[in-house]
Image (cartoon, rainbow, N blue to C red):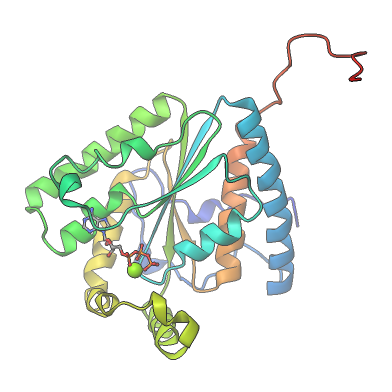
Length: 273
Ligand code: ATP
Ligand code: MG
């Protein structure tokens, strides 16, 4: 099972379409095994990710940016927890992008984002991202349409700047169904230890489900490129989501063909006393 093919079918082709409506959030067609086998494989991939992250850090030559977007309850936090379990916190940074502060709003929308991109040897995970500026901003009409429409171009160029300068980018949309969101929101209400995650605002956003899907459809279609591709990850089943994300990230790091740095001097024969 470890020679499982890359989940290419989930990649949005450059220029789109993302075809969210045609993609099943409960799909599991890429992995032939059971849930138990899937979990075991995810564990093995986690260990590999740990090794690759150590190598990335040791080599200090490449940078990896992971952009995570999802509808509310889509599983961004759970994905980060599971997939990066065991990696070295020194080289992995998570940046969460919430509602902008007045200071952030007084600048262009990429101003708050750029300082969080990864440096040499680092993995940066964006929990929400600059994509909010063509998603929530569009759905709520926070800026006029002609202004947010121009952002697709900025975003593609911004990401091109990063990839040209040596950053690898992978963008993941955790795709859940409206029914799955209903169940997860209800669970947040019903289970005392999940209530802290519930927000009334999530219900108001849920009413705009279709608007968000349309906004995601266009954003993913317009910004998936060869160098900064979007993946639509089926996310109704958490184990499957974790497996697919782990595989995408491991493949991405494997492709960098990294090596531990040569210490330069001949260390053979040195005995530490
Ligand atoms: P959780 O899983 O804990 O709910 P979250 O990412 O949903 O995590 P919240 O604090 O609930 O975090 O929500 C952050 C909110 O900030 C989201 O509703 C998001 O759409 C909003 N937001 C993020 N970026 C922007 C932006 N640029 N403009 C306006 N709103 C934004
Ligand atoms: Mg939220």
